[in-house]
Image 1: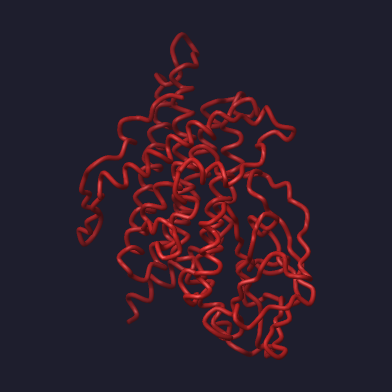
Image 2: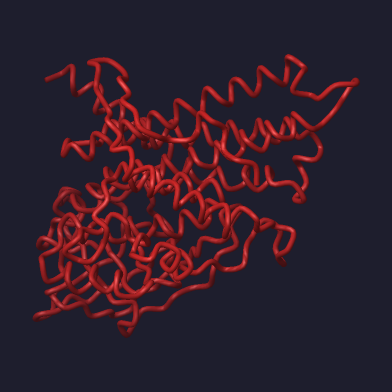
Length: 411
């Protein structure tokens, strides 16, 4: 694999960016080391895989978290877990750097790993010490996975439309309902589950739902088939049915009625890494297109020397750099302890759009070859689409940004 372009190698530095001269300082050695290890792992264990070697073009042999865990000696499988639970306690910024490197190799693998962060985040931000010890602790003792169970067949972005119900019976809650498009659904050791506990349809969304921790082997849970998606096929996506599933009251997060706040609060911390993953895919598409443009010849010269192609590459490069700055700004805001809804949604929406634009442009640079599965860019184009859908669609992100932006002026 060709070495990274010089501008892509991270090192010591201070960046002054944007209105208000906000300053982002890199703790050079520590973060560069984590980043370099993730990059080496990606180059060694992910990038060399090729879709043509598998039964379903564009998919990969199932990737296990043990490979990632063993590669890192200590548990970078769950980098954002706090040290008391045995994790590394890395910042969201650090996690984003690692995520971008993994996504460069395969976003299906990156999504499988990042979905662990999404599943863990409600427990990280709202769990009791005992809940953290029990459920986060096991994540670093073994290479286990968890999942975030919110989306349903008839309710995705419209959380108020969730139909899964939890009824309190003595010291337990009995859950019935169905979840859909659950990443890591068939591999998870436990789930974060959002269910309606207030049956009154007029109850405000912010008080109608409760968050639960549910062991995956609890009787009454039925895991559906692995869905064959358009892209990111290494990510395990399934439907999950809950039939009279009994959950002890000790597994309620923060108390009855606090689930919506927890579920949405998790996104402020997980959307920056999602944006980082989209940026990693875009960088890969740019690199593949650039290498191809420097090799492919038409009319007696490499196509990179044609202005039409060089300008296209220039546009792609500008978009990738801006997407990177967007996720880094949002991650930095989170690490400062500030409410990050505005920047997280900007980063997620922008980077998701850029991933799709740059992947599509990469296919254009490849021409007819780009439309064939023997070349990597068709997979990148398929993989990119989900970044405009999961963890809040591109349209939902714009609703959030508009609300947050206007709210600043209306105070």
